[in-house]
Amino acid sequence: MSRAGVLAIALFALGAIIAPFMLKPFGIFLISMWAVLTIAAIGLNLTLGYAGQVSMAQGAFVGIGAYTLALLTQAGVPYPIAFVASGVLCFAIGWLLGYPALRVQHHYLAFVTLAFTTIVFLLLRNEEWLTGGIYGVNAIKRPVFFGWNTGKAMDYYFFCLGVLSVISFAVWWMLRSPWGRAFVALRENPVRALSLGLDTRRYTLMAFAIGSMLGGFSGALFASLVQFIEPASFALNRSFDLLLMVIVGGSGYFMGPFVGALISVLLPEWMRITEGYYLIIYAALVMVMMPLAPYGIVGLIERGYKSLTTKRGQQKPASVVAERAAP
Image (cartoon, rainbow, N blue to C red; front, side, top):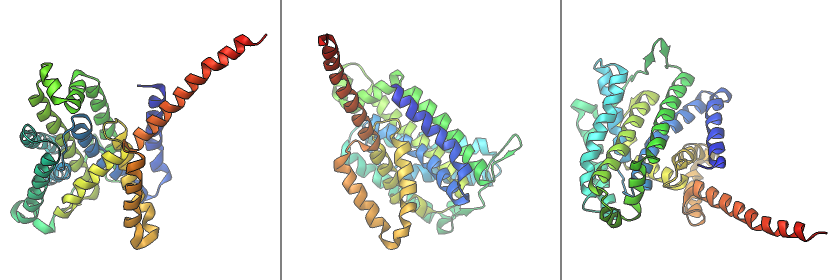
């Protein structure tokens, strides 16, 4: 990673630490939502941006993780165990959902995962004996660790930020391991990757499973953040929002989900002053941005930085020649 990239990550992390001390309770709630949804977006970026598998099921995995944690904690299961269980369950389901990706690709796979999201939503809404149906699950508690009660808004934000930091480091390490290179090879050319001896079947399943697991962890944090969940929160629009975060931020870039989630969470709130027009303006901004920055905000910044450094590199020899020619 370049010095500029390290500096950008350091400034982003510093801003995330300082931000809650400058915000009111609702602002802290919004940045907590950013931290929670960034985890789900990181998972989708792994599946879509690195492994090249188009998934529209991430919102469903957020819902599965949320309901798993809510039901287990209300049954008396300790929070850490319930949190881990929400990720493990989504990992197992994601592994099974990855099997269609072995046979269908691109928009065909998108339809398969879209159907899965619809099935999960219908189960959450209709199976009242388990999920409470349209009445949802309320009074979801926040965790207490070694006397640290995360019930207050700022405490829970730092808890979410800590989980995000651990997951981000784990994903960063994985992407620089042979697994990460295998995911990129799978995205670029599956046939060539297979001819080089890469087990494309296993890596496709792992991409789905790990991405789904991160969606489950995000859902577990989401449940404790809002403390009330119901099926509508995990309908198709949740998957579309997460997909938008990855694309706007920069699919295939490590910082893409962070930037995309920040824009997706904060921009609609800032534009509420336009009242009923904010959704139209928001959609128009996205439509304008796509042709101008097809690789997302992070991709646009990276290309601009490379172009600037290239121009400086081309100008440097000319100045050296001029200095040598001077008497």
